[in-house]
Image (cartoon, rainbow, N blue to C red; front, side):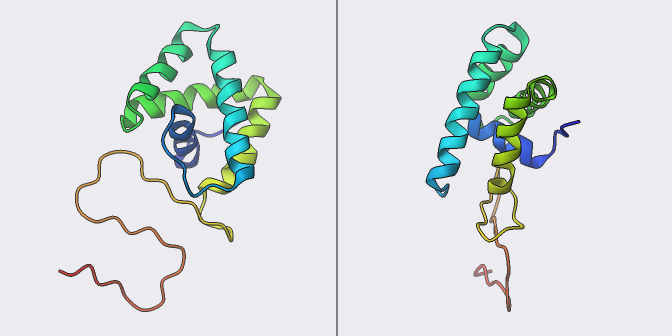
Amino acid sequence: MLVVDQVLIAIAAAVAGKAVEPFTEGAVDLLRRLRGAVIARFRRDPEPHAALEAAQIDYDDTEAVAALAAHIGAAAEHDPGLRRLVEELRPYFTSGGPEVVNTVVGEVSGNVVQARDIVGGIDLGR
């Protein structure tokens, strides 16, 4: 079972169109392929198609992106190709590997610090 977690939600935001500049060429290719597969599959089903459109309109809308992530997760359960693409993209959205890519989804009030390893402290000028 594919779990709808923060990583899948970040992938869904990227599928919806959220900018992903720090990606490698390989990750961009995977994302394009996943986006194409999702669009093709959801075109035939009104509810997932509506979720995709809502997330594309406002990929900062956490509820819309979470709904899209749930539909992607459900579709991946029945489509091995879609599941493979999602799983291949996962490492690009987690912070455990050598290539760290962080994604902030939703509204942020104040400072955001994203880092893998911090030695010492962080001074935000307060």
